[in-house]
View 1 (cartoon, helix red, strand yellow):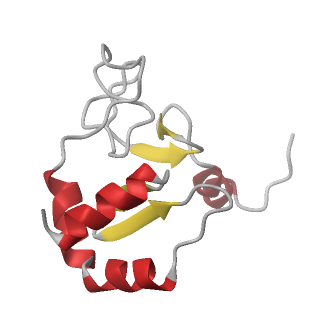
View 2 (view 1 turned 30 degrees about the vertical axis):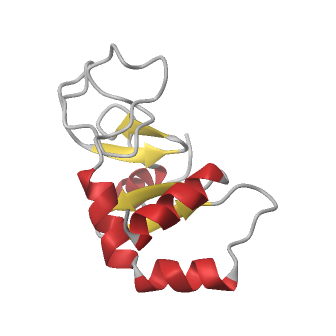
Length: 119
């Protein structure tokens, strides 16, 4: 193995989760478990290799959603159309992906509605 793969395996065994957001590496840490200084140093030193390994992995599917056209809780934005409206504009809402046509994000609604009072 290589240092980046060893590090991923080690941290995943302790409950750490890894995901990519574009070119950004996102790390989800388990409660009450901090990275050691050495682990952080290794992550920084091998960040490009860790990202390459994550990009090469097949997308994970959330258990129970293997049959669906897309994984609403998966790490990557769905590449399919919304089954209700047919749009392909998705955004993260909590832990899952949501169609922004059917359920516009609050920030967009606030911009569109401006300062109008609620009815």
